[in-house]
Structure formats: C-alpha cells, structure tokens
Image (cartoon, rainbow over all chains, first blue to last red; front, top):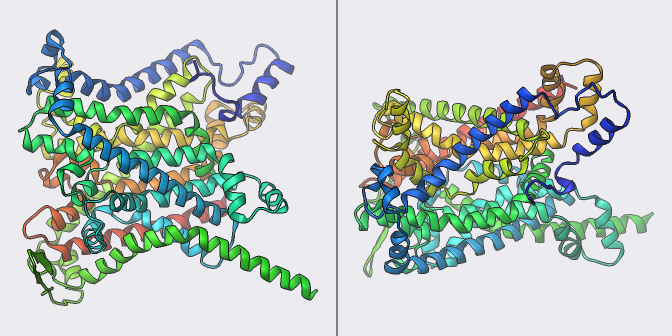
Length: 307
Length: 316
C-alpha cells in the first residue's frame, strides 16, 4: 500500500491535472492518463510482461537454490519434488559465509559512508561556489567515469601495495569510493541546485559557517538525493568482484562476491551452493533497495534533470 | 567603497577556502587512485613492460624494472600492426555496435516503460517496484542466474523449445554469445533509464499537455512536441552516461563468458585479459588499450556536447 500511495513530492505533475479535470471540463473529454479500456488492458499487459521478465531471473535462481544436487539446474522440473533448504545450511555452516558477509558489510558500509560524505561535500562546493578550477573539477569527474576501470587495476595494485593497504578494508573502501564518488558528486550537485540559495543565506545570517550551513541545513534537506547516492554506492561495493578478488588476498578478507566465485573452482562447480549464496547476497541489497526506493525517482530526477 | 572591495575580497577568499576544503578529499582520492595510475598508464604505453620484466618482490629479493622505453611502438602495433584487425579493430567494431545497440535498447525500453508508469493506473507503485528490481540485484548474481538460464537445456532454451523455435548455444556459438551479452546487459541497464526518464516525465508541467490537447494535438503530436523536448535535459545526461557505462561495461561480459568467447569480448575485457588474464601479462599493451579507450570516449563526449549545444541553439 505504501508503494502506491506516493508521497506528494513524487508526482507534482498529477495534482494540477486532477483539479483542472474536475473543475471546468465537459465530462466527455477523457482526462489525460485515464484512457480507453483497450489502452488500459494493453498497458497492464505490457507492464505485467515486463515485470515477469524483470522478476524471472531472480526467482529462477531462488528456485534453483532449493535443489539439492549439483546438476539440478539442468532439470529444473525435478527440483519441485525434493525442495530443501539444505544448500543454505551448507553455505552458512561449512563455508566462510559469515566472515565474508561481515567483510562485505564493512566494505560496503564504509564505502557508502565515506563515498556519500565526500561526494556530498564536493557536490555542495560545485553547486554553490564558483571557485577557480571549478570547470576542471567537473570535467575531471566526467572523465573519471570514462576511465576503463579494468585498466586501473594493475597500477592500483602497486599503489595499494606501496601504501601497505593490500588485503585491508580501508584500501578497498578507498578504491570503491574513487569509483562511486564522481557519479554521486554529479548527482548530488544536481540535487543541491534545486535547494534554494536563500536557505544558505539564512544560515549565514544566523552565523553558521559554510560547512555548518552544509551540515545542518542542506544535508537534511537533501535526503532523497543522499538516499540515491547511498544506494548506488552500496550496490557498487556490495556486488563488485574484480577489485575485491585482486586486492583481498587472504580468504578471511574475501568479500561475499569473491567467496562466491571461489565455489566454482574449489567445490568443482557446485551450482546449487552458488545459487544459495547468490540469494543470500541479494537479500541485503534488496533490503537497502526497499528502504530507498521511495526516494529514487525524486532523487534521480533532480540529479538528471538539472546537471 | 574601499571597505566594500575589502569585504568582497575577504568574502571570496573565505568562499574559495571553504570550497577547496570541501573538494580536497575527492581531489586527493581521485588524484592518488585515478590520476597517478593514469600518468603511470601513459608511461607504460611507451614501454615494453610485461609481467616478466617489471620490478617485483620475490621473498626478500627485489628485482628491479628491466623494461625499455619504446616510444609510440605500442600504439602503432595496436592500431596498424600485422594482426591489428584481429586484435583491435574487430573488437572495436563490436564494442561500438554493442554500445549503440545496448544504449538504444536501454533508452527505448526505458522510455516506453516510463511512459506507461507515468499514467494513472492501478498497481503503478507495485509495477515500479518490480521493474526497478534488476537494478538492486548485484551484477554477478544477475549474470550467474542468466548463465544458468542460458546454458544448454536451461530455462531460455526450454521455453524456445516449447514454442518450437531454434535453440541457439547461447554460451558457445559466437553470434549467439553476442546476442546473449546484449540481452543480459539490457536487462541490467533498463531500470536506471526507466527511473531517470520517469523522473523527467514527472517534471514536465501538466499544463503543457492540456494546452496541446486544447489545440487539438494528437497523442503522437503531444509526445513529439511536448514530451520529447521536456525530456531533453534528462535524456542528454542519461544517454551520455549510458554510452560511457556500456562502452566500459566490464562485469557482464567478463562474468558471462569468463575467459572464453574471444569474439564477444569488448575492448575493456580484452584489455583486462592482456593485462591480467594471460601469462605473461602484457602490461604495456593493456595500458595502450586503456589510453585508446579513454581517448575514444573523450572524443565522443566532445562531439556529443557540441552536437547538443548546436541542437539547443537550433531549437531556441
């Protein structure tokens, strides 16, 4: 129910329409958005089909994870008669699952916190202040998006090794932050641009420093934008494989993603265990997603529409 | 007068000071982890570094670098060396096609769904929730699931078999591999486009539609002359990001095919393979690919922005 009842901010466009339609229009004219039965059936049909396509791979892997044998994925129909949660028990009991889960939580949580914080302060600076170097900074943020990440891995490895940060949480958090911050800063700049300057001025008049204004007035107002940035940072860090498998060397530092991919080689293709782990990894991501999804449209709109 | 000037200077100083303090963390992190590797990458492209001659630590012994400076040889070799077509140009063509097809599909499907979701209808919130879901699933979980579904005898071919359609070897046949990669990447990328465009649609003032309707504009005309111009800013941003992200889309192809599928590799995964996925690793060539990729995107962005600016002017 909470899903359909959008917050007013989610659809400012609908309100005037509702008023206008009831007020002074002949009843014959269909209101925009309320269309003929055929169009409505087609729309629902398309959306249902799209929803199935969106949902199916997720449900499929959840279903496969219930099959006890390692070649069950070849005969999905047979799983139906012997469904069991044994794979989950095995993954949680016999592997480093909880260690990996903890590592992922630390790294993804740290990336979200550090990344969003420094992206927000950058976004605020470029939204409010025209300092020398402003253009270069915006350009750098865009170019950073373009740099093929795969190619950075080798030099990054040497830098982390020189800094003594290989196999450490802070090293991986730094690397992830470097990949998420440019987009987040861009997005948040767009969001800050929609917050009236008068609020900053009022804060300054009341004796707050620019950083105080940012921290006490602007950040609380920017919650939808921050939610989207946090969502993006968390997901990037939570599901990343290439960096994590290169920079985290000992198995007690593996993240879930790396631990998961080790199943294929170590446990010679135990797909059903991989499927169970996949589901277990997807759950926290789904929780974060559910928490922020109400903000997604508002947060992204400002970022995309204004930058 | 003098006081005002002094105040302005003080104000601008304090402004700049705070601005620099606030961007410092980003500049430092990006400088260390992106800027320095970039410089080092450019330097590597001018050498013949491989994993055999790069300095390394074996136990307590440090073996120093022993590679040589070769100037622009790497670029020459990649771009017009003896097997340049098989290594670079064939992958380049596929990468461009891959980017174009994926972004068109992302944008087209995303816009279609956004238009549907922008209507007043029952269950809109639920549809939206389900349709964003692919975005929330970590990529490697997605790709792993698709791998099982696309395998011989998997769900996709099962469905095609039921419909008496041909069942291609999605993970083994070169052409089918490409189709599979595009399919999976489309599934992954549509939600972002859809949500961004939905946001854009909601920011178009409703009055414009009513005015157009009053003037007797058909649905198509309203779409063409109200919706599309209203989406212009959002579209230009998401298309640019979409192109950059798809061009550099590493995870989907890397995880879907691993080290197999030489034909379906795009330039990024190919560069990674040269630098990390083979023995001996060819760091210099890998870095050369990296710099070439970056240059291609910078040139593209430059043209794209100029094109946008010209369009903006043409449309007033």
